[in-house]
Length: 95
Image (spheres, rainbow, N blue to C red):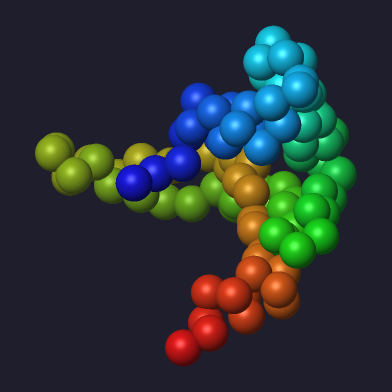
């Protein structure tokens, strides 16, 4: 089962029944938007106990169209590099 935003909102609503669902939704959207804005401004985003994210520029490279076999140049682009925290690593690797 994957974790999607709606399931996360349901879990928050179960844990905090005194807070309105629309307020929980606004809060979750605010957190996600701040992460996106920080990464789009090339800032590092760190969530203690979870991990850190930063943008990385992938260099221009040569590629090939798999259907036709024609060589093409793939332009540079931004990607996200994510590193998990030690707490998360230890939790995943308890066995």
